Length: 260
Ligand SMILES: Nc1ncnc2c1ncn2[C@@H]1O[C@H](COP(=O)(O)OP(=O)(O)OP(=O)(O)O)[C@@H](O)[C@H]1O
Image 1 (cartoon, rainbow, N blue to C red):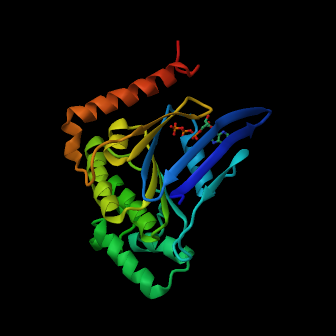
Image 2 (cartoon, protein in one colour):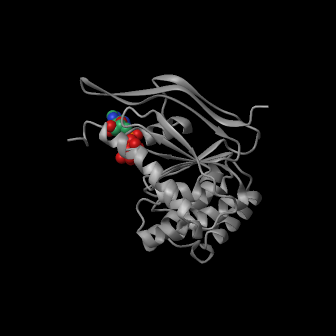
């Protein structure tokens, strides 16, 4: 039986701006297993966000196709968390978290329970009536994560969700996401520049080439679940990070924008 949730086949994307065209991505092939936490790393501008937006259906590919396997009539297929929080400043925390459920036409009683559960889970219970302007960056990103989890999508897509946070807060949020995911077992595609984050969270790390991004390596992360952030201190962790960094560095050297 095919246990793939996501299949990307020969996907390419070209952008036209004025008279020029930019090939941003591909061709790229990728499979994501049901319940897998897949991390994608690659040089800046190699097309990671473009790939995620194509998988989310927010952008169409210039060529190739993406298929997402659905196993539920009720649960939305995807939900996306972006780096810049993407929460509405004029809505309260509670209304922001409820927003995705309203769009998905989740009935009121179910929606109420879910909003309350995810606000509590993300430590936002006492901030339901607050507006985003009064929250720190970490709390805004918690709202954005609560909103994405609350719709209980079949596939969660995360585009550098912690990139705007400072180093300490980033570690706190990574540990929280690790815990949430380990309870939840959802299929996740997670884009990051941070190798440490990719290894801590991922079952597998995909390394993309410089633009137009293709897959240059797939690395299985061998650490058992449930994981704790303590695994960072092991020599195996450092070794794997070094291995992936070497792959990435050689890609950055082949990028005409970064090589001398
Ligand atoms: N709407 C667009 N119009 C024109 N060019 C675009 C558009 N969106 C992305 N690009 C270009 O496509 C390339 C890939 O962009 P993308 O944002 O997918 O890369 P990325 O790997 O996510 O980058 P980063 O790591 O810096 O976030 C870049 O050169 C970018 O300028």
